[in-house]
Length: 81
Image (tube, rainbow, N blue to C red):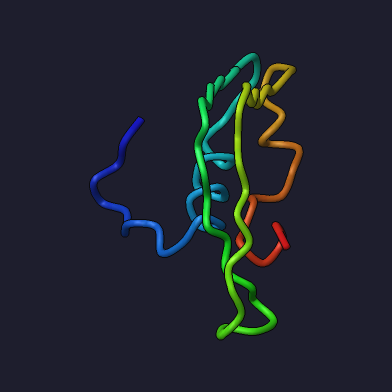
């Protein structure tokens, strides 16, 4: 699934957009976290203390159908918020 001709993702939104654009029907990605901490910067104030997100549990991303990515516009970082 890796494509060495593409540029590396600049941030998490680019990574998510690239991943979602590759998914097709009947794909499931499962992630399990055990006491993982993320330091999330404040986009409104770069000098603010980052928020700490603590993750314990699972995250699943599923697609359904024959080719749902063909029916949807390609995900871009700006459309992810």
